[in-house]
Image (tube, rainbow, N blue to C red; front, side, top):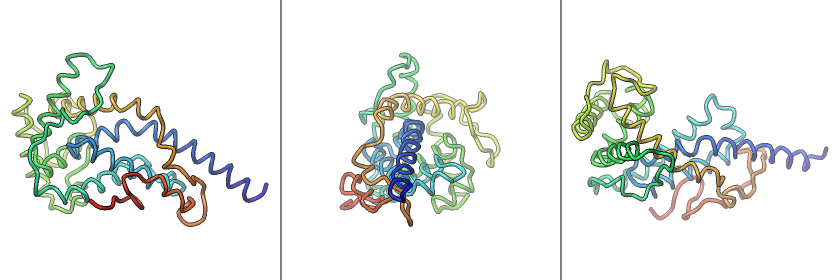
Length: 252
């Protein structure tokens, strides 16, 4: 088999593999991005750029212990980088009114609970919202959050306590968290606030699921062929939208 034929065959294999990865992970990643940023457009931009970066580096990313964790971390970093430009202008947002896709299979009660959690989350300052989502929803430890955000462990705890206190008051649930080092991986009966956030994330995820079935934007995969170096042809970058380049947006 010639090098060209082998390269094309392998590129097709990578493309199918990436498609499956995207379809499986996009709904939950998009939901978390909306909850982190409070803005659907910013969230979708960060998610799109994270997947483009993963696609360009797929031969490397696919061998990671958790490709999903790689894309999630990339998404959070892009949101944080862009967020620093507008945090000083922050004001409470109506997150439930940012045209988020409604879950079509949810009950009236589930929708009401999800919207209440999103509205409450939208009242938090950006740092508090980041910390509470990363800890209570994503299950990250204080130390991991500290390292990623570049703040002290004490600051993580302070922001988390303030966020939980406000959310608990607005949602009328207990603010009790447990030991400071506790790592919340799933919803727990003794932590109704995490249950409320997780329920909102599931509701959002269900709303984003049809977009995942549509597949990754075709123009973003132009040149999806592994080569030496980053594993893709340079023209794989042609799919960046909104003036993005190499995973970052211009003019923002």
